[in-house]
Length: 205
Image 1 (cartoon, rainbow, N blue to C red):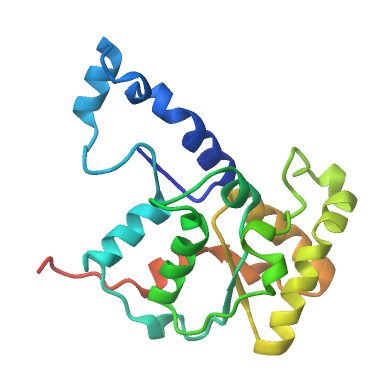
Image 2 (spheres, rainbow, N blue to C red; image 1 turned 30 degrees about the horizontal axis):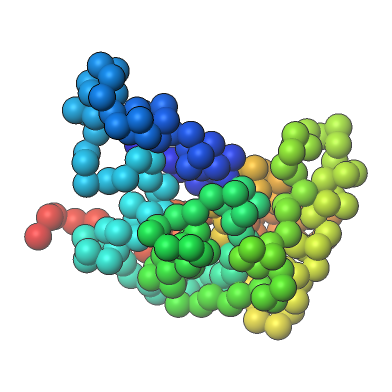
């Protein structure tokens, strides 16, 4: 069971899926037994796509041409539900390190926003909590201000032109509000957008 780049989905999966798949209670009931037969025991339940990708990178299973992303100068936005309501990996803070490790494995140009605006101190994108509707655009634009200010600093200082994130709501929100702050709507994208640009496909060796 792999969860994609969605903050709310990962928060729910991280909190409840062990119970839903039965392993939280020992996986002894008939449903859990049948389900476990279908799932790969080599992966924890659930797994975030970033965890799976990073495991494959560490195992040398994926090959990249980092220069394919050289047109991008990248920063990373920590999404609320991932940063403060869940984890990744086998240690505290993995939810911060793993996406950044992936970015650095597939791209050459990466710059952090200010440390008081990232990781556990991250700012909300301004579109979560049910706000992601055009009728509330004024609130959404105001809610995005802290992140937009932090983004502007790395744009001005380092020429950042791509803000990666791993939350669908963050992507939808920033796509809408970035132009209000003078940025191109395409400045935001996913971590796996960078992966797909750099990955080298070919015959299995």
